[in-house]
Image 1: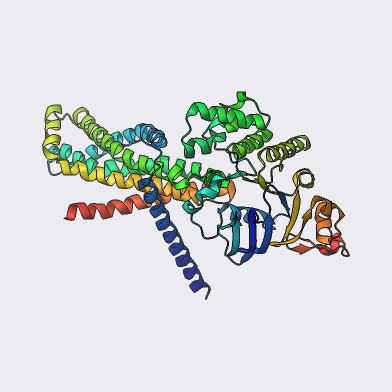
Image 2 (image 1 turned 90 degrees about the horizontal axis):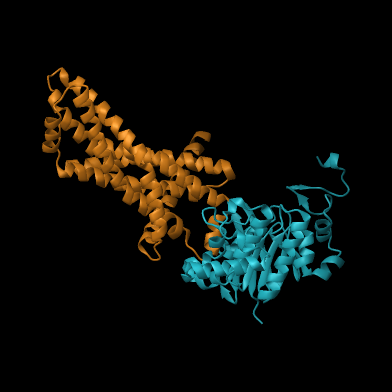
Length: 257
Length: 266
């Protein structure tokens, strides 16, 4: 009986969370589309989410591009195929690693920050204060962050693409003695626009997920400092899992058609 | 005459815990009502229900004769506009300087320009006896007393018809408590607002109340004027206003009967 009760409790909690998240997403979409739209706050969030994430994303993608080049070179060497390093680095970075690793890094940085900020506002009654001052918290707090993250992530993914490919180029030319001009030419020849745009579409979805999970967990945090800590952890974990799940679904959708 | 605020048989539960169990209360226009009661008696839930931050399970809450229960946020925009609220810890926005906190509603809702908003903030701060040197400070740089006063300035900046005070003197020293009580009294008299204050602090009750109500276990069990408060022989009220550990009020779910010794009660 206890076992059944545990399963029942788990599923009830799961459906409650799912329903509440769905309503939250719906309210956020409505807030994003209906005026007033707080352009100044969106601008501030673009700086905080996008600009300040650049170093993290750039370093991640540079080292990932370099490591990928080494793996492909030594893996491909057995079949005498080191020449495909440039094309596979470009493809791997633009289609998968740029947006996904960039998304995960931004999830760790931004989702946590958003959840902590909004969670603190919740437990210190600042969100209630917003409501009593005739300001909709979804419009003032949630929508600007979601819009900013959805705009910023494709730009960050593009930066990750360029720097990741550059990381592969540096390793290829400096460690393995590839000809720089040929490396660049092979990258350009092999890469199609669809490879890049598919990654950017994914990145936009990841940006939405990152901000919405940060806002959602912060908005419903309770129980003081411990509650805010829990919200921060939940935001990063849930955003990361949803990014990987969404990546799988979108890859299946975009590349099986 | 229609009451400014009228609660009728308001119930609110969280899961199996019933917090409000049929609250009936009326506040007349221009009246200062103070609701007293122990921790967990339902004061904050009642206040949040009137503000529309919580939705009662049943009952009626009318403001100016208009039903607010079940009203969507957008539907009560005009009601929200005439309401000011001082939160227990001020609830100032950390990310904004003092002047933007004080003039928040005017900037966000009325589209007031920065220059006029600063003037509005200066005027509101003056009402709570604070100077313009605070305008550009962050809330984090303010002391507890200043925090409360800036919160009060924000609550009265738009000259609301109704102001709510949530434990306005909690955590303050006796002198600052007296300052806040006087500021509340003065502001309310100047603006002619109707106010609802929830507090544990009997000094505040005597300083600011026209009418007092005692909330116990989710029900209003006594209400009357300040004079009636002092002369009342209600055992619940007497225990509360005299701060007695023993009496009919159960403390944290345990009845401390006056006949039982503390050791027996444990």
